[in-house]
Amino acid sequence: MCFVLLDASSGLARELNKRRTPLVVAAEKVSPAVVNIYTSETGRSPRNPFRNFGNNIFDQFFNDFFSQNQNNKKSLGSGVLINKEGYIITNEHVVARASEINVALGDKREFKARVIGADMKSDLAIIKIDSDQFLPFIPMGRSDDLMIGEQVLAIGNPFGLRHTVTTGIISALNRNIRVDKNKVYSDFIQVDASINPGNSGGPLLNINGSLIGINTAIYHKAEGIGFAIPIDDAKRIVDELIRFGKVRRGWLGVSVQGMDAQLSRHFQLDRKKGVLVVRIARKSPAEVAGIKRSDIILAIENHEVINKSDFHARMASYAVDDKVRFSILRNGKNLEVDVQVISIPKQYVAEFTRDWLGLQVQQNNPHFARRNRLGTSKGMVVVNVVSKSASDRIGIGPGDVIRQVDQDRIDTEEDYNKSIANLNNPDRILLLVQRGRQGYYVTLEP
Image 1 (cartoon, rainbow, N blue to C red):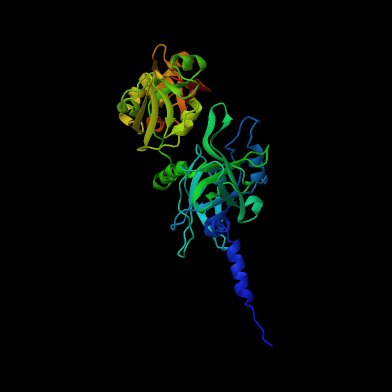
Image 2: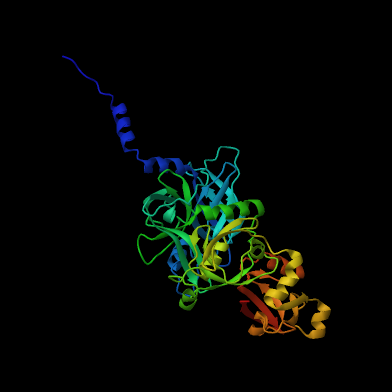
């Protein structure tokens, strides 16, 4: 009698190899680099970056995401290690106002982390952990070759369930999500992979395990709709955050308006698309590159420009020294124009303030404030307003004091110069103006 002994272990190995699909391989490859982020905060409630005056598609996501314990708030998010030095990319709202950040790896190691830089406009942040041992990481991939319908994976920590893997397909590309009338998040990847509270900041991967996006938000009114920031957009932000701790916003120097049906007919376009250049700042990158008034900007880096909000949202992802290619329609001909964006030169701030805003300003001081009864000795005092300028039309007058430019507080001339130099959207500027002891916000659209 002859007995045949079967090697059960080798048979199981062959079976497992047959079942090890590309999805399994991708999850195995990337999971060690995905981290769980715990933050502690005391005092004020966390800021909701997607606040929309009570009508916010992301409200439920944000409310579920954060604990309501006001004395020691605990939040939970995800992140991904992108290099061996311990740099982790996540969402800005995950770490915003955190007094303490803890990071847990898949191998159960835990670290204290520190914020290297955070950018509210893009909702991206870089935090860092330090270790004398090996840290698993995955380099950033590319997102310019994504295809609608291709399979993707999302990895994160939904509701505290560590290293949860979900899969789906890319449902759409270049999605623009309007948060309020002045804010649009641009160029999202839309996926139907399950993305729940706690996934925020985690990686979106293609079937090869390449990092193609950062999961950011969910649409709570429907199932199967999630959004991620394309990794090509994130790369520019990440580089700025690591090198400078902030994003040095690039400046183009054009004022644009959206295309309506009448303008589309005038320029013989088959539909409303692009934005019309209505003004160009002197000495600006746009002027140097040869962009002209009445040009129609149709696309930025081959991404079609849908409207004015879309144009500014896309430009917000470009930093100082980035080169940007514009597809332009001029006199019926299609042109490609390369522009190197810069920050507004400090020596040009006064000229820019006069020519673009219609103001002449000077630094406030206690003597000037007392003599003119200004109500404050800080900020920049308006000493002259150009007739029929944007500032004149909005009602700014001599003696008003500029206390804030966009989100930047203005106490000194240095503050003002720095804020103007960092403008990336000079045709819509929010100012906090103090008149006497009263302050009011105005929006300038030169």
